[in-house]
Image 1: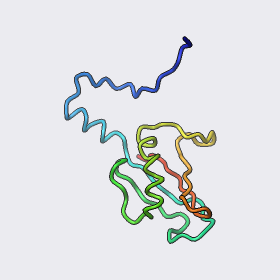
Image 2: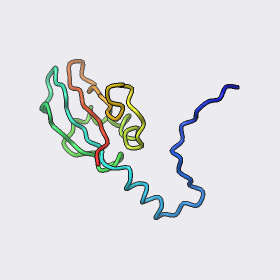
Image 3: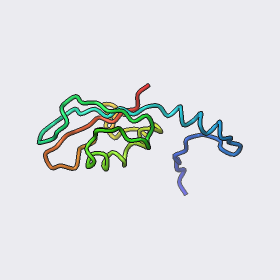
Length: 110
């Protein structure tokens, strides 16, 4: 069997208290969603920015179709899972579900 690296957040939860849990939750930080490209019809505008205070609480005003796609990536961003883009491993570039829609940068911010 080969030596495999397992993904682990390296958090010892064996003696976790509610306070410990809430402290880690606060450390996850905010997630910024910013439109960086617009190629089709969309009521959002280029540069428009929204924030998730945490990966569960969705920002108001975002298109429901885009929110559906973002649901797949907010937790990855919150825990610091790297992007597949070698130019910026801290930012995910997500396309809305429209064929000619928008591209959004999803990034954890302080």
